[in-house]
Length: 113
Length: 115
Image (cartoon, rainbow over all chains, first blue to last red; front, top):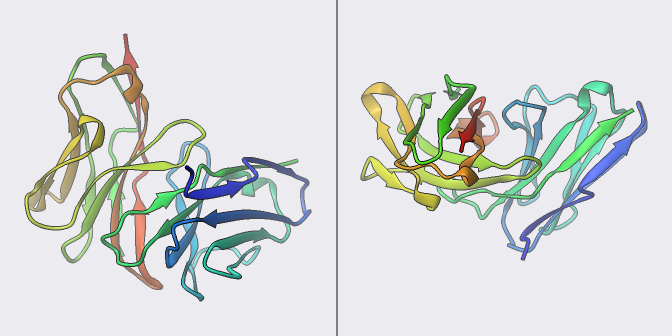
């Protein structure tokens, strides 16, 4: 059974039209991450939550926001998507300590027209 | 800040041949090191990890990796590659960033397996 679920699997949006990607987890993990992975590149960390504490990477564009209303759910909001935001967005969770492994979802492939 | 380098962008091996994927890291303290595998259009799956102790770690699917502090390396190996091993492989290092612990990935190595 999938433990980190990302919906939708594929998302198409228009240039400048806000879009929200969702991630849910059944693991009750404290930490949730959002990564952006462009074609043929490594995943790049956008931000993460440790419980309710939000941590934004310094080079994450202001265009990207996140919400975590409860332990199970985390959302990635892209306020005004540009063509350069087309990518795979990966959600990952971790129980807490850094020596615990990350559990990844299958990702949402975002296309911007 | 930590960084990871995977020198080989693409590697092609014959089925049944041995495999070594290179990974070099930069981090000031003893790192936590990981190898992940990603099949096309999928998320990442953990193959193995190193935190401390024995420098040769065993992972899933017959993979192993050896931590060499003197060379700042954590190379991934497999004695006999199967066609199903074709995928993208990412080395990663865990370190303390501006906002707490964070995982930094290398650029990845795409493995192709010839029949």
